[in-house]
Length: 135
Image 1 (cartoon, helix red, strand yellow):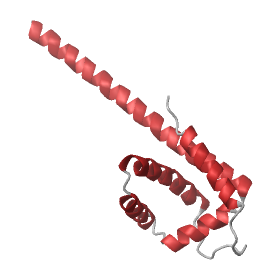
Image 2 (cartoon, rainbow, N blue to C red; image 1 turned 90 degrees about the horizontal axis):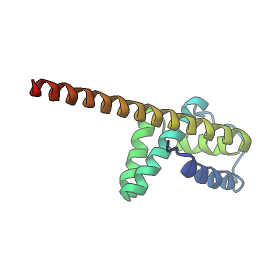
Image 3 (cartoon, rainbow, N blue to C red; image 1 turned 120 degrees about the horizontal axis):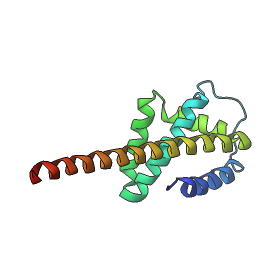
Image 4 (cartoon, helix red, strand yellow; image 1 turned 45 degrees about the vertical axis):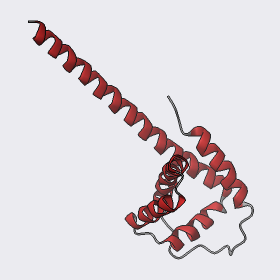
């Protein structure tokens, strides 16, 4: 089963490295995104990253990113300030990325299961049709 481990791992390494370079105040943002929502956003952003690499249209991907934030009633500034805050907590951020990876793997597993079930139903239907035409 294919997982998103490799691309998310590379992304994780870059993010952790970047977190050491962040130079901003250490106060918690007033409008900090809830951690659970932030984790879901990380997973969604990884999907956007995959789309970006396939589509190669950064403007379209950025618009999708803004639409994603809007669907959660989150501003771009709120996301970046929350992201910066969470990035400073390196160990906890690794746990958050692993949780995002779990979400992606669970969704991928569900899609595979659904695909297998659909294929099985199609085979059964084809067998029934073959039997009915041979009679």
